[in-house]
Image (cartoon, rainbow over all chains, first blue to last red):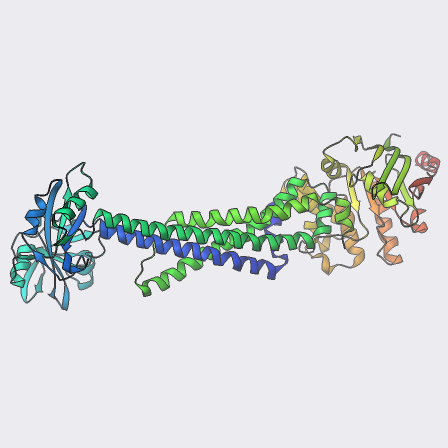
Length: 369
Length: 234
């Protein structure tokens, strides 16, 4: 038998107490993993949305109420006005409408200038970009796979046949399942060539997006708003930072509660094994070996809790979050955090009882009834 | 024959000096000797045994065991691991470990590999006649068998001295005789010095020398001429 095996065996002598400790620490780990996954998922979705395309921010009309892909519109001539603002490098409009697409009675059709697709973060996976004002469309990979469509097929949009000329992928989850065509074609279909939904803005190289957004707000703030402006990005980022901070706060609470639980369990264990510790001293175990044994036992409990807690956290989050419209994202950092906390709790929780055990005079320990 | 134990004017007090557990003990014990220490309860015999095993330290005096000066030595755990094997009145086996694993516990202080530890533990179980019980938990053994496992554990690191504190105190007379016989056989076959604390005169008289302690003083250091004669006869 190795020393390690001895350490692993020991905590389960008092099964009920060990299980209670594991449950206590598990709850903390589940919360850390689940909150971490949810926070990461929110950050990821937020970043995908905010960094839509290569654009630094987007602009919409005041009346849209901040809905980036709503059907409310602004006048198309805002694109030229924005393009002329100092610091703006590129400004491309998009026109988002809800109309019949293929079998779907209602789906999102997005019109964009063929030259502005880079700002919308579209990368052509297969085929090519549509031509301006042609009855051509590109489909999101998810949509194409779902509908069994490929390049060369045709699709009916608002009653008109469109040729599918490309399949795209995008980091923007709002657009991954959509259909794109040229903005002029969408204007044709809607019989409204003077309206747009949003304007994607890319600032000059070296320019501060925040300053440019502020400038636009100062000039045209009465009519338009920088929907996904850097300012809002910062506000949102602050909110997410607070969420992450609260996640750390809960982790800290988990450390305190877990450490108290494990101290209690290990103290009871040392108390019940007083005579045994006396025997270990009598057969020549050093204080360091006894300390290692008790801290090791504490770590066995907390690490096992971390494994079980992580599994439960991931499973629970993966099942429940989609029901609430959340997409959790589990990064290695979350598990490093969870296991790091388990190790800290294990060491803190084991150290005090271990010190007590080490200080026990062997003769007293051996006399203990 | 060289002395394995040399004690001079050993004093140990408790409760701020109000209780003198040992009051100026002088004693020598030869290597390979079997000594029993007798005396009434509270006489200081267990305290003396604890001093010999470095489980406790004296207030004054000197104590040298197996070449270790126990007063000045800081690594007493090394001394205990290498030179001493303890047998207690209660077996003190670890309940969740098997019999063979219990014997391996003292060997964690040695540099033996896991397989060497296992092999030595099984050999010791052979010596106490419990090889077939190696994988059982202590709760599956009788009181006598548990004490035999404790004896095997005491021999795990090839000690120079076995210190036994009332080793048969919790056993019936028939089992006691069997255990003592085994202990004495192992003392002889391994040439280990055996020191037993007991208040049972039948047990004490099995020793080469009987030492009597009373009120912390050695009232009878015994006569080890019998031992000399016995060795000469051998």
